[in-house]
Image 1 (cartoon, rainbow, N blue to C red):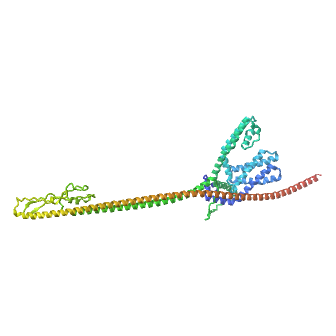
Image 2 (cartoon, rainbow, N blue to C red):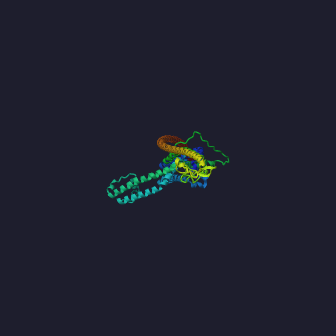
Image 3 (tube, rainbow, N blue to C red):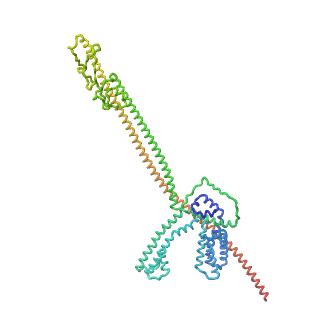
Length: 609
């Protein structure tokens, strides 16, 4: 399972809680061997320095070298047995082999030949590099090796460009100063100038040399530093974003290396084991500094969550406001519909009342014709009252009603004396007077004396009928005036009601618009204030977090340094005690061996004698 985890192509699995817990559990079970391996690698650096200083002919240094490198060689043999050919595919394993061969070669050369400086340098460098890999054991230094490798890969182009510029600067100096073409003038001198070191001030009196010196020092010091800092900062920031994943990968590789050694001594077992992960209810994530971009990303995510919550709250508020506005508009529309229905019903009732009054007024004159010039303009053409009454749906509201009958000349026809007299009365436009309404045409010559009395009676009846007609005419005029006044009052009341409804609707709409604008402005101000408050709190929290992180880092570094010093002192004391015991035993053995050899020599000498 560890091999599949290490060889997985998706590095994001190392950020899952299950993989973290599993690797931590495995590391807890193998951390003793991990610390032992780190201790051996650190001791091996001391051995390499002792070999470089005192040589391998010193018996104590040689024994120390043999013990430490023997254990490391056994460690590598067990790894070869467990991994097979895959052992040679790992870079650290190849470094271990080359390091072991270089140390053995240095010892053999020291025993039989003179020291070779470059071989000793390679041996010490490889041992130091391998000791740096032991930092994987510690949680706080596990990721630094991969950080150095990534920074080195990112700066390969920069280093090549720097080397070419340094060489070009050296060539220019040697040509201008007429110096010898050697390593010091081509490489060492321009590199020292880039570091601010230059002792040969006498050569600067020459103006071309001084010009090249100014250009090169400015270019090598300032320009390259300004280029190097952003490259390094970008690579470090990119790495810090993946710090957790890299630390878990290094931990997995270390555990796999130790597990391969342990499984080589264990028997294969098919027993199943179970892993149960439980989290405490009070557990919470600690704030750990993971770089500027990561910190900004976390703060932006927090502010995003807050802003999304605020936006959702604002959306709900706006939805409630819009729904309330829609409800109010619907209520106003309902009120307008109800008022329109009431007005229409009122108008219909007015129409019906007018029709009733007309029908009642002209009920006594159903067959009477209206003059064509008194027919109302808004009426449909009709000659009789019955035709008007039959079409009430086509009648519209009239501003004025003028239905005034006119009595033409009263013609008395003598049909039959016994049947009496018949009058034909027709309505007209003009209002008749008494003199015009009563005009008798009598034919006194043709009448007999016997009919004078009858004519008198008929004239009296006609006079009476005409007077009644005049009275009815006056009454109709009064009723028409009253109807006009009622109609005008109805129109005025209807217009007033419509104006009131329109004004109330406009007032409500204006109030709603004002409320919406005021609410929107208050919400916008609240949003702006909350955003300012969030920014201020973020700035304050950032300063507090940075201070707390610095304090924690200082405390942790001091505690780690104290623990490391204590462990180193303990290990040095133990090694000194072991060395004293070993030297004491070796001296005893050597003395005993010398005594035995001396005894044998004495016996041989005595025997020869």
